[in-house]
Amino acid sequence: MEAIRCEKIVKTYGSGSTAVYAVRGVDLVVNTGELLLIVGPSGSGKTTLISLIAGILSYEEGSCHVFGNNYQEMDDAQKTDFRKKNIGFVFQSFNLIPMLNATENVAVPLILNGVEQSLAEKQARALLEELDLKDKLEVSPRELSGGQQQRLAIARGYVHEPKLIVCDEPTAYLDHKTGEMVMEILKKKVLTKDRAIVVVTHDPRIFSYADRIVHMEDGLLVEKPVESPKQL
Ligand SMILES: Nc1ncnc2c1ncn2[C@@H]1O[C@H](COP(=O)(O)OP(=O)(O)OP(=O)(O)O)[C@@H](O)[C@H]1O
Ligand SMILES: [Mg+2]
Image (cartoon, rainbow, N blue to C red):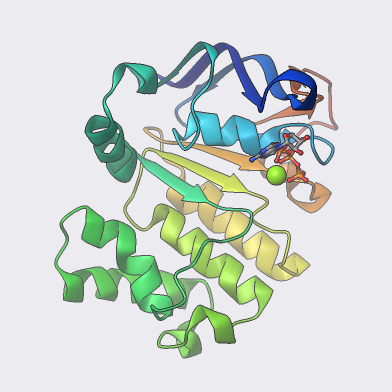
């Protein structure tokens, strides 16, 4: 089944002489059961592209369907509802909530989906333990290292079992062993035949987890062979 179908999507920031043509007509199809990596130089439009796919930004031209739904045909309430149920987004800059502790941060997507607080926190704790954060459950994100914050952000991205999980540089702050642990969890546990995962990365250590790798350059996707991804 198709998780994502983007056709000629375009996103420009600003206008006139200061316009930045961040995404310049991207075609992309991602199927369920697939873990796609997007690689490319800084400023090539990777974060912008996945923000369009996740419905965080809107595009000016083209179309993007996620599980058959087109954000541009939804009103704000429908879009919010669709996103909270179906999309998990792991931000490059984490976007954790400083007033909430680690467990509470991870529980947020469950609570937004109507799960009762104590149950939501129980599920959040289980994920944090799995991600080696057992002794940080009650700690504020401010008191965590970059790698620990990143794992919190990752847990929050899949705790509500969304059908599409989009991760922006999820291993940038992780050492090799922890990065592999996170990718193992994403690939073996989180990815099912009904779900898709899109990961933006600069990190060649995780290329082997990809079912497919696409390259972004100057606002466009270019297909280039990379050394063949290991089938896990
Ligand atoms: N909010 C914004 N307003 C104006 N320009 C922006 C904005 N966000 C991104 N850009 C520009 O759009 C282009 C693509 O940015 P984007 O963040 O998508 O790149 P990226 O591939 O994710 O880079 P990186 O690897 O450094 O995270 C860049 O030239 C950037 O300066
Ligand atoms: Mg980026």
